[in-house]
Length: 206
View (cartoon, rainbow, N blue to C red):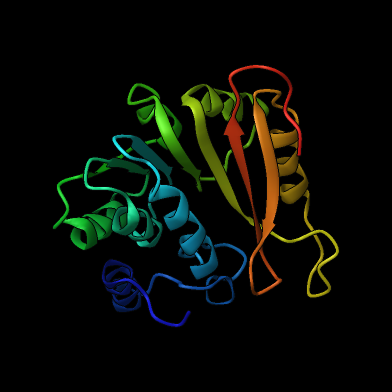
């Protein structure tokens, strides 16, 4: 799995050109990094099923996650991705400029995406800090729509301990009865993500 789709390869090259970190190790503790390959491939699998649907991304960064989504989604699907940093949004627009199905918006993601739904897929990559914010995103999903949140350490991973932020994210998914959800450990065994599907009724479970 070393090869990347053309649009993702373009986004990775742009990150290297502008100095946007491609890995957490490069980013350090205080900078964001690009969407990890394992996360991107998972997003591509979900995006490929969004026929006639709408995908939302919270936190475009330099456009790597967007490239995974846009490269896999059907021709009748649209992607709306929001980035609060204007300079990063401009970089992403350069990467994605050849695809009219993609709209890169500058602004607070949770706010600017709120009136664009419903969504068949939401990639929440912008650091939500409250259960209320998360609940608002779930409300934007159509029945059967999915929400993904990454940047977790698997429980029991030997390399580094799980963090308070990880526990908060798991709490978001576990606390919303509209979701059926699970945690997916990436092939590197060092990182994981959460994915939940909006149910039409009943209580969520993992």
